[in-house]
Length: 147
Image (cartoon, rainbow, N blue to C red; front, side, top):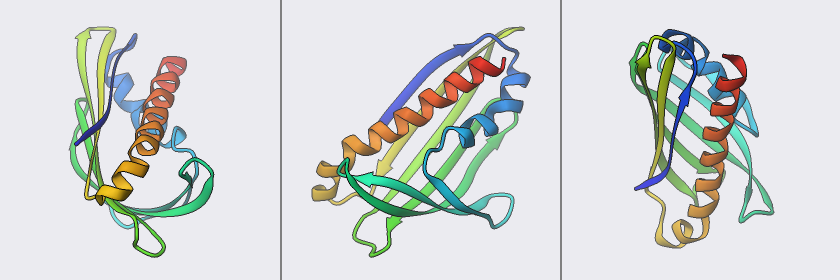
């Protein structure tokens, strides 16, 4: 299920946007800690979140880069769970870039969520959407500031 999408244009060449892309993503991830890179496609990390808007929780993330096409796309599959495995979800995040001209690049950021139980889906969907929107907006802001 598509949970968030953001489209925007950056006044910079596609190659420049690509070179800043990863840094913009990681700088926009609030609450991320204990990052461990397993290999060139896999990583693990912990994220501090506020469950239900007020209850502090640590979520454990296993990530795998599923697509990387230089200058045009990056996709990551994230398996996210809490310590007790009561909350489990699969989130797929995709970023794509397209050169609109020599000095303008359009971006599309999308996040999909699967695997949430109906109860947790109802209770957490809005929070997950808010978190992803915050990351996408942070990424856009950083790319605009740096170009």
